[in-house]
Image (tube, helix red, strand yellow):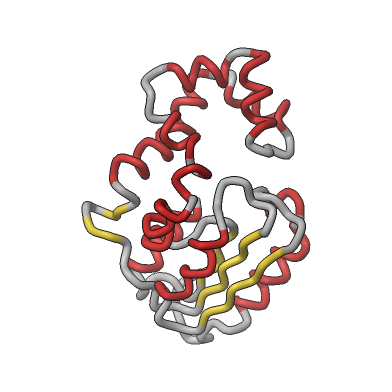
Length: 184
């Protein structure tokens, strides 16, 4: 969802008052980070490009749970139950396949700079998304920007630190222009 949020905010600043993104760096920062260790962290995105195999692995009782646990999924049994439905698995994997195949682009064009007040929340225990991209995400925001590092959390910030994330969302909403007709 983070990549979609960045693309919408960059492409439609007239429709977005503020932006808060958890974990996922700006797509341009993500691509730039690939030679700086991000490619190794994103191994699963490459594996998800294979036809049918990921759906089969995620649907298998043993391999699916091990794979999800290895990725640090906080509720592997619940996620495993959801992904055991091949249609659900295919839908979830389609996000990764589309992002990977598009080169993290929006409509064939790179996702541009975001021009709305933005808070980017990253966790230093994220096994999938590294510090290099996180620290350069601010270079892609041409507005008030705040970079927040949640120490000790993994990739799954909404599950692990929901109250802190909610406070950051409310804080960012407080910076929104009151006369904007759009919802953040």
